[in-house]
Length: 407
Ligand code: PMP
Image 1: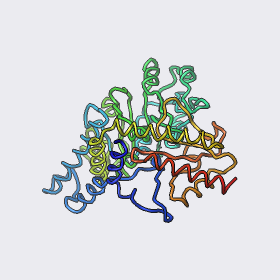
Image 2: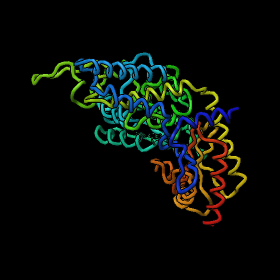
Image 3: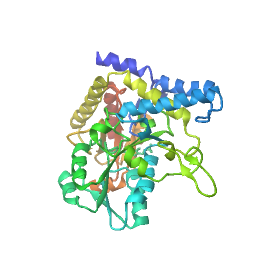
Image 4: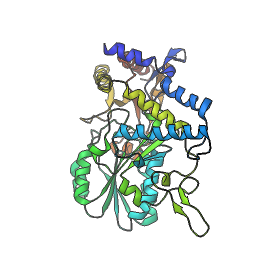
């Protein structure tokens, strides 16, 4: 029954229906980006075909329609992540921009000489480098929270790192390289004792399970539309109203001002204060379409499917032998990261690609994590709910071939 449900869902994703190198595409690179259902593609195309006007200008009928759809999309996102108000939803280009925004505005205001920022050793570069840049500017310190050999965050080590100088903890909800799900509630609890602010990189979180920012009680949460079945170039930064209000603006330009004069400029209210320039209107509408699509599915079934996929991959890895699974956290999303003994990850990736199987190889923008685990990189098969158990079989058939060829 689940099989039929998933097979039907797959029909909604045109890019899944193609062949690559003469083989049916087995797309296992969802950590990099997910495919888009027809409703998302149609929502963007319809916007450009019909409304296609700038927002917030109040100039004419179509501009009003564009504004309505654009602000409607903000409400869809607000409800999707359980934020209190649409004003707490700031449009960005993606997770990367959300983190950079917080680092350059909140960070420059609140982080000073001798302060500390904690990030984990498993972070994507986009949750490391913006903080490094900030620390260099203000004379603060960036401290890594250790990760255990199995890819779990070391909570005891985090507890030891907590002290009054720690002003911010920024961690991934889900590791893109290993799939480890970080215990955000535990991290928030520790942070509150210390009055540290908590930012979560949700790039790999929202696509795997329901996220409720109020329940998590995080201060900032950033994610990308393109990893959530929506368009590229679009993202969301959630921030608590009180924090966002207190932050200086990010970029200067149109839309973000209340009044502009050479004598001095005053800034617009939330969220426009952070949204200088013409936004990605079609992107917002496309993201809302992706969320509405997800809301129409049974997310319990989707989660069960992803769990079945990762369980099967782990079981087959044991069976095949010669595979070292990298990252076996107790709580883990459907990310199967591994090394084939004696083979370079890039060679494995090339051989899989020739068989129509798309995976990612290398350091996954998490070089410090690779260094910590003592691996040159990994092969990563990152699964979405539209992947099938047959595709896991195909992956292992591909790996058998790769083994024969390479070893
Ligand atoms: N954080 C994590 C955990 C990610 O997986 C990614 C994307 N690979 C990012 C941040 C950056 O997202 P984007 O490139 O969409 O800004």
